[in-house]
Image (cartoon, rainbow, N blue to C red):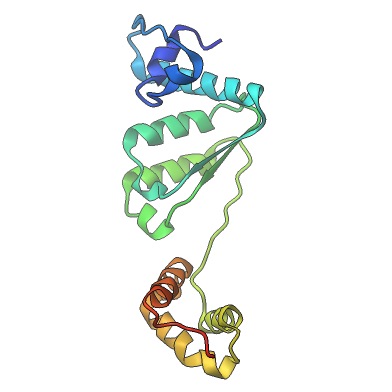
Length: 178
């Protein structure tokens, strides 16, 4: 079903022949970018038809390269691909510093499709104290000092909080009372 344009997708998915057999690599189209975008859309349509809806998750989009941003922008402008959900994760403070990701986010917000934006904030001192209290099963008075230290070290970033606590546990700096 993908036809001769399938060869355009091989550089992106090099193991594709293992999944579907030999692929015709005829290069009869001069517009490789357009051909790649069409092949990618066709590949996604076939994948959705063969199985079930497809979720495409891309993390750290603030670091996206120009070619990937153009492909994603092109894909988002085609409403004929049903059953596809694209989830992007990015740090908005860094995305605004990158002209490529900033332009992509602006384009995605203007595209004619359903868009939901979930903004995650840093943990407040109270939320961090509640998290430490619940996680370590401590009385809130006992967790306050540890929460303050975590807040200073992590800035309230939930990912960093988890990494710091894991590091402390791995190095036996955070152990349960016996």
